[in-house]
Image: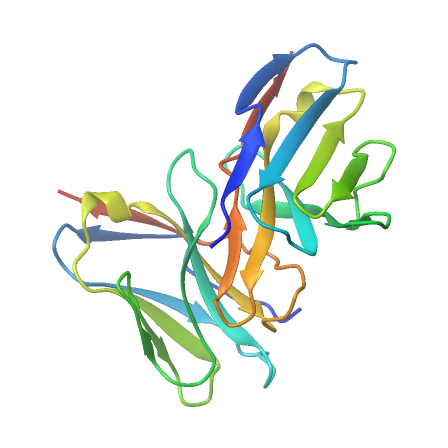
Length: 115
Length: 110
């Protein structure tokens, strides 16, 4: 299955600033997914990123707040913009491992604390 | 997407079998049943999936009801390292997003 490298693993940021999270996959994938996991909660899908097209955002998430880049088939970034303490969460990227293999591989996440 | 219902938490003793239930009464004929687990401070990891028949792999077994409206993840001999949140997810097994429910937090007692 795919191996995902996600950076940074954690960060502490000042409110009002932005943080860009990188997700690198060791194989080419069509879609990459970005999730947010607030403290003590389950994962919430932020958006789906296809190479060569605009990301598709889920209800409650907007491009101005969470811009996503997908420059090639192995890499994506998620930016958390104009951060507030409510953005403190773990952010995870994910890719599908392939039809019939049963699933999705997840990065280990970026733990973001906004102060 | 069809919804799944799981108990919030369960407890089991180490080295005993664990049966984690999941209800999915609105499942459609093309939905696969997937199980993931999330260990502390890690991203979710795939455990097992199935469509109609029971499935076994090195991690667990998946028992699917005949009407497919429920399923059970079976850990045959729980260890302390199996303490995690277990998510039951319905997916059409195509290149598409998956949506997580709240999952079941499994506690293993030594």
